[in-house]
Length: 218
Image (cartoon, rainbow, N blue to C red; front, side, top):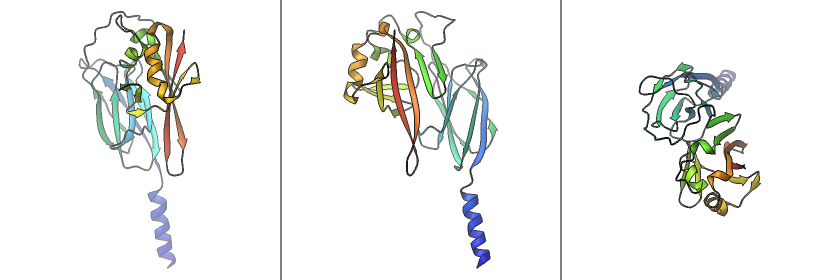
């Protein structure tokens, strides 16, 4: 009897022990050149729930550290001018290098000394002037070109395929029905930075990801 209880305890303990792992590597383009500012996302298999993410550095290198109890994970490669790529991986420390196909994008103006996209903690920042083209009339036109963001219909906005929960201008929240209206009324020249905030909310069963967008005006 005592032996059975001990075996049961061991099985439960082993089954719920999380294992730490690290996935690292380099992202290169079609000419095998390192690609900076490419987003690498770690999710459960067949799910868009984000576990960890990072951006490649100037040398195309990335590193993701994760501790969990899942056996199978998915790694997704996303970028502004590259084809999306994903693959299932085992939950163990490993080095994975990816070569991705690049898209041809005509850029009207390039300012080499200013970054168009950068991350600080749980915030992704888009410099609007770097994504605006000469024929863009509203901020909604700019939104449709931002990497990792998708606009559907009238005001439905997704970040990494998850719908946003809040939309604000200078930290003043707008009602959900006004998301689309705000993006169609504002001009690109009036907006300085588009910020995407991510916050994990602990629930009774699992963590939920809350996503908010804030516009910083000029």
